[in-house]
Image 1 (cartoon, one colour):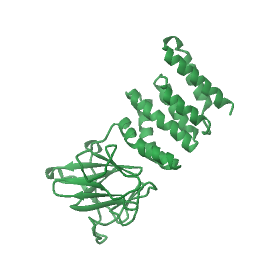
Image 2 (tube, one colour):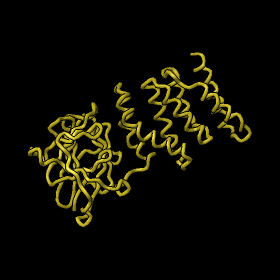
Image 3 (cartoon, helix red, strand yellow):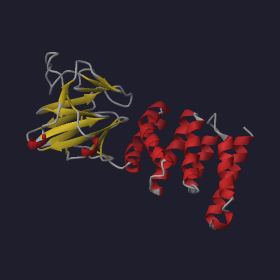
Length: 286
């Protein structure tokens, strides 16, 4: 049995022993993320299992969205969240280990990750670099986008609370962009996922001051011809006083769309529309 750690679009083969993850260059997987401690988490790899342990980090280690307080056994598809970074464990039977591999050169970088040429807890020569497996992404278990956003949301909210909106934005932006691409393409997206995405977009608009995130939230509901729930409107009211560059014309077009089907709206939806009209007036007078 073999284990791989998937980060971004790269698979790292895990050898038996201890695999350290953190911000320090001494870790086997070094992450450039201010929310990650120098030595944040440890993977204990054995012949038939892999366990994850919090190495005394400031912000904790999450497995499938739940913070761990002891060594935790990992299964195929389990999602580990460290700081603002997400990675997935893949369990492969020995018979499946026939994929084409390439060798990563020392200090290979994949986005915010630096692959340090060290195996489990011992330095090695440069020619013994970690393997990156070029596999079919569809074979790796991944959470649905709305679920992934919820898993990462706690970490993003913590980053916002700590006054680090850039980290929250970096954590969420790929998932948010993928979700709105689905909406634009007419692919079905659960309403719960829309609301999760809109809520985080509004919070990013507040934290970063970027009106584009407010535009994002409005576009989600314009594309799906829906009205946001009241908690999302509350978030947009908060963002209205902080964001710059919001597309007021697009917002007004969305309000016109909603007014055009006023006869179809429930009393609750009509009240939401009135609140959105009040939001438009606030933004217009800023």
